[in-house]
Image 1: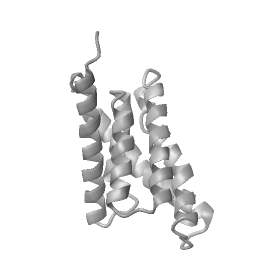
Image 2: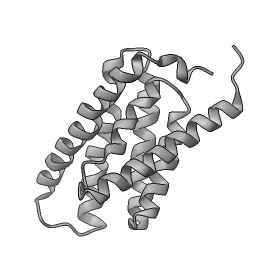
Image 3: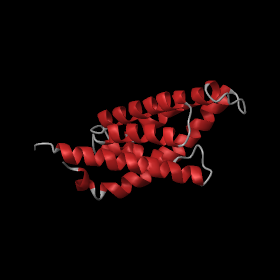
Length: 159
């Protein structure tokens, strides 16, 4: 089957826009580390367009919500690595879908919090634990719920 470039680009753009909108919603509700947008990180299971979509969405969300430059760079890099790894693992099992993102953000974001934002409210191991729980809720629990709902409609991702 020949891939449709316009459809790929439109899928990526919609995913990026959803990521930004859901990040804004989380921030408006005061949920700084429970980003609803993290649930979208299961989308590489369905489509390769999710890799650039999530990455660009994360860059835009971080820029538009006033994050520091290093957060924009390294936070978005963590999202890219998680999305890319999730896409590579898609043929193994749907159970792997959120885990690359959970792991990447759990390893990167606490370092951003400590060394960019100078967060000393917790120890560094405490920041890692806090981020792990946050990611398991955001990308894991919410991600699996989204994945279950989308599995019934997988055809919308076909190009």
